[in-house]
Amino acid sequence: MKLVLLMGSPRKEGHTAALAAPFLEECGRLGVKVESFWLYEHTILPCLGCKVCQDRMDRFGCVRQDDGEALFETMASCDGIVLATPIYAWYCTAPMKTLLDRVVYAGTKNYGQEKGPSLLRGKGLASLVTCGYPEEKGADLWQAGLQRWCRHSGLSWWGMLCARDKGPGAPFLTQDKLAAARDFARTLYRQAGGEEV
Image (cartoon, rainbow, N blue to C red; front, side, top):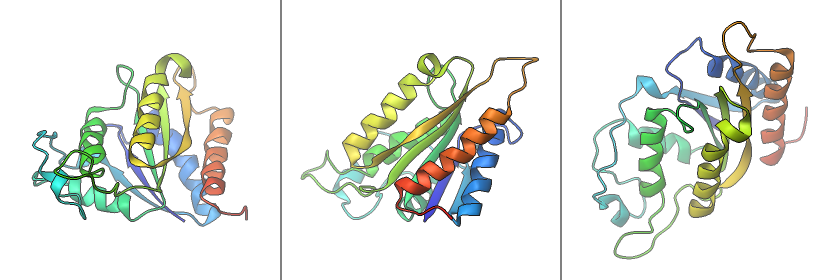
């Protein structure tokens, strides 16, 4: 099993990275290969809405010359995609949103001269998020957006792990969160058809 983890946090020592660490450790224990990318280290330009990608049926096909296509190719070569992000203003961070705008359209050929394939059909999609509100108030819109993308493009929704940051003075990475991150890795592994080792 191979996953790609797209990290949307701007901070390598932040809470989202801390939550991802035990998740990645458990993936390694299970024999899951994970390729990780820090999106803030990549050049991802916004979608132009030009629709050129829509008539390039067998590839990403975007006119933008940046890291978007390489990131998409990595997503297309794996079994599942994990989006790790802090929630800012009820949604993911800017580089992740910019990449998703491009991937949703260039990866699903619905708007060209003829309807074409979804290049990510059959992949699993999951998310690791951190936010300052309870999950149902902080990450609900993000989850709804991802579930809609799955329906639109034929991905399987594998679920979301949300960890709340209760602010200064409150410890973030508690034993419960460590256990939840490891359990989330096992859950994704099972959803992809793996057997516990």
